[in-house]
Image (spheres, rainbow, N blue to C red):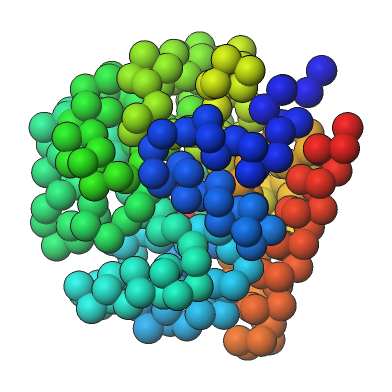
Length: 273
Ligand code: BMP
């Protein structure tokens, strides 16, 4: 039987969340009819902003790796935040924190990147234990930010499987949903969460592509239909499949729109089961 959460429209899940970022994501998804997140993994800030302008209308979220940019600057994040308001999307810095609570709180708030000051959403590996959530929450929660835990990965041979994945869900549940709002995962890892009891988690899946099956470094792709209907994920995350498409700026815009339509059709189909 399908997971009960997957039978609920995004709009009906807004009220099941208290975290402002979770609510905003679901509101945007409903308003713009999109469950697409674009991962902008290019090395120049100017190029990243160009991609964001092309895809912005089609997405609920833009995902970054801020340590990839050769020319990272506060002006870049200021412009990204401005675009996130103008084009109505959430910013997700895919930082994958993985250290003790005290260290991650500093990595999140400080340094060159000051991630918490501009990124609505970030993520963490549960491997250090629940202190990582506490450390990040001291910084992010007062700002209304959200956190995802990495419960599974898309890459071949990932160790985040089985008991690790189950314990990740248990850790999130124990932490509560004030700050942790969901998971990076390949499946509906929130197994016995019941929306009828008010418990709702966002599942976001990378490793999505319509053309390629994978890359030479272990990445594995599934189609939006496989991810949204079969696996029951809420958000599809696409990188090279969109920003890497040949044919220039218009082609990138068109490809984002193609993925948006595919993802949304799959969502409508899953609701109709
Ligand atoms: P692409 O679609 O180009 O393969 O990019 C996928 C993006 O999602 C990358 O930014 C990668 O870091 C991220 N990602 C992933 O591919 N698999 C995971 O399990 C978790 C990720 O964050």
